[in-house]
Image 1 (cartoon, protein in one colour):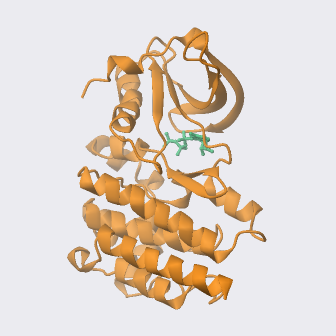
Image 2: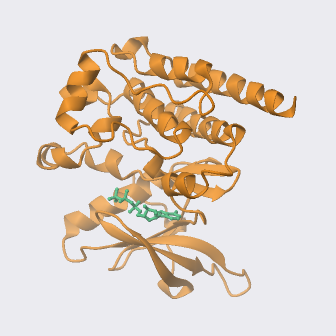
Image 3: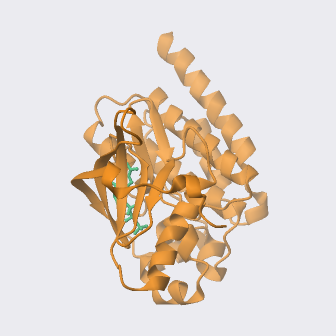
Length: 284
Ligand code: ATP
C-alpha cells in the first residue's frame, strides 16, 4: 500500500527537540510540528531513519509508517506524516509520559489497581481493533506501550510486524526476538496468529500487574521454552497486585494449544468485568 499523499510533511515545519530514545533503525526525538501558519504547533515524536544511503533500508523503514497510517484508534499511536527526502522522518503523535514500563516503575507508589486494569482494558480495545482489521501485531509487550496521560495508554511500535516476514531477518536476528513474550508455536515454528498475540498480551498484562517487572527475569531464553513445555507459567503476582480472576484469565491466554486460548473479544470482556469490580470495591 503506497503512503497517502496527505501524509507528506514539509520538513521546515518540523522542529526537533531532545532525543527520546534510540530504536534499532532510527532515533526518536521529541519535537513540534506546525501544519500551517495559523494552525499553532503540535507536540510530536519524530523517528529519524539512521541509514540514509541504502534504498532497501529506507523502504523498510517506511513500512512502519504504512502500517500506522491504516489505523485510527484512541489507543494506538497515530501517524502525523512523513518527510520523504533523506533523512526520512516519520512524524507521529507524542506520548508525553513515554514508555509504560519505566512509567510503572517511576510511579509504583501512586498507581492503583483500577488504573492498571484500565490500561489493560484500553489495550484490549486496541488489539480488538487490530484483530478486526486482520492485523497481527507480534510484539505486544509493556516496552511497546506508551503513556499519553495518566488515564490513557497507547500501543506503538509496528516495527517487528514489518520485519519478521523476512526470513533472513528472522534467522539472522534470533537473539533479538522477544522470546520471553512469545508463544511456544512462535518460538518453535514462527507461527504468528491472533492466538499468539493473545499469549503475548497475557505476558504484557502480567508486566503491568507486576508494575514493570520483566518476565522470566534471570532465566535464559533457551530455558524459557523448556519451562513452558513442562507446563510452567509466569507466577501469580501478589494478591494485592492482581485479582485472582485476572490471573486465571492469564493462564487461559497461556494455554499451550493456540486454538484453545480465549479470543480478544473474550479477554476484553473479562478485563471489563474485573475493572468494574475493582472500581466498585474501591468505592465501598
Ligand atoms: P525498533 O523496533 O525500531 O528497534 P524500538 O522498539 O527500540 O524501535 P522505537 O519505537 O524506535 O523503539 O522508539 C525508541 C524510544 O523512543 C521508545 O523506547 C520510546 O521511549 C520513545 N518513543 C517512541 N515513540 C514515541 C512516541 N510516539 N511518543 C513518545 N516517545 C516515543
